[in-house]
Image (cartoon, rainbow, N blue to C red; front, side, top):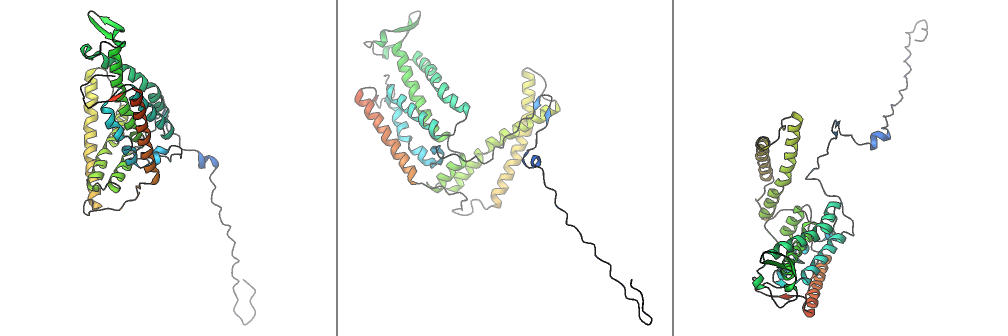
Length: 333
């Protein structure tokens, strides 16, 4: 306060404001920015991370072209060949389509190491085992006795003989079944359920009430698998899964079935309420978040596959390496 002059009122001196220094927000350290949370570890080692069954798939590179095709194209391309293989006899034609499908999967599909090993190692082993199994059931009276393979005996049990001709007939049957399986994997390993449903609803005009209802039912399967893992983990934490033998196995099954059934009922109710809240089925059409289009590359893939398939059949028939017959009971190579 300043000094007062005689006859005047003292003038108060305003206080000098103290400048406030702004506080700099704490900068997170690089470890806090980039280091993810470490799961708790126990005596048995690090805890396993449960995979979310509804997580979006990672983007696929352009070289994996099968993932970028319309799902209907991957079904339409091998479908005529699969129908023709039912009436095909011989070893060369099914073997050629197995090699074709395997090459497409290895080049154009995103496969894990386990799936790739199953295709490259498991498929040939399965063909050999199936050929032997089918060959045992071949009637020797229906095999052409004049062929050179009929005189080659692989092994014999008493009066019964397992000849090379019988094995070749069984091998041809095994190759046809394997060819059908490999051709179906072109779409099965590279197409998800939502992608197929969107293609059916938008491209083939399947009613969305049927398509999305079926999709909701199929999505229950991974949901139940996830719930079962959670229930079993809870039982292990509580120590209620101890015991060995059939009685303990039955006890564990009952202990997991009841909470799984309760979870399924709650999930079904929530799905029904969610569909009703979104007016599912109230209108003839619905809007789509993701558009499924039939592009030029889909047409090119279908046409190219048909051309290659026709070339394989023409080459095999001209070379006498196979045949086509409408008789489903005919036994032949």
